[in-house]
Amino acid sequence: MDKTYETLLVETPRPHLLLVTLNRPEVGNAKNTQMGLDALDLWTRLIDHPGDVRCVVLTGAGERIFCAGGDLKQRKGMTQAEWQHQHEIFERGRDALLELPMPVIAAVNGHAYAGGLETMLVCDFAYAVRGARFALTEVTIGIMPGGGGTQTLARVVGERRAKELILTGRPFSAEQALEWGVVNHVSEPGRLMEDVFATAQAICDNAPLSVRQAKKSIHNGLQMDLKRGLMFEIEAYNRLVDTEDRREGVLAFNEKRKPVFKGR
Image (cartoon, rainbow, N blue to C red; front, side, top):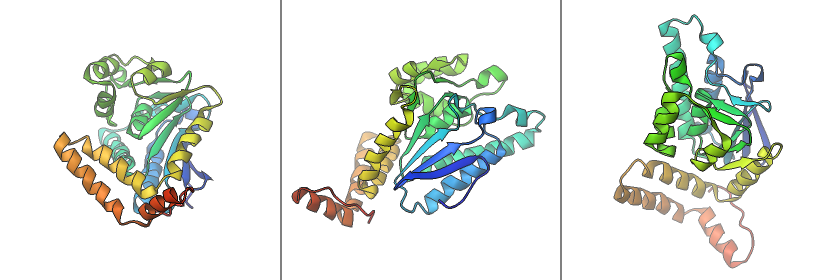
């Protein structure tokens, strides 16, 4: 990506890997209107023109907070119309993030509260640093999760656990997040990005069209009953049969070498 943003850092630390950093560390990477606009623009660009990006890593600036949620200082004094307009920007950004064709890994470098946790839950999966804490705190300030939290958290941890966490607003630890499936791995301090990049590299090394079709099949199939999900899967599978990468993969296997995938 060749565009710069006011609230996001966008880098390519390795071939095919895009690192996106929420970059408002002075306010805990809280989401203001500009961050919403920046994220919406970036995710939309990646949908329209993914280029050679095969995996995205989303993290936060600093070592304490991934994202503190919405910027309540900016929201102080907002009219109802202003609040709802800002939230519509956040909603469009969330939906665009959900639609990204390539996998998105959240590298949770610190606490993820409210909209920060909701953003993490929209990613395909997450690694977190030990010591990070998580919470959906909206009911403690007179609102409720509106960035997808009531839907995404319940799908991960189950209805009863989600009700407990959302209705109390209580925080939970990285170890609990791992136990309940909210994160996939807990890294020791100083190891988070190393661990995330190792997994991201494994994804980048695989056939990009295969990865995208598999992600789409999992995501959409879970919205269907099993029979329709299986039908969706085979349609996604069949689109890969007549690709250069499928032929390269089989040839490389038989020639006992590492395949060179081109996304074609």
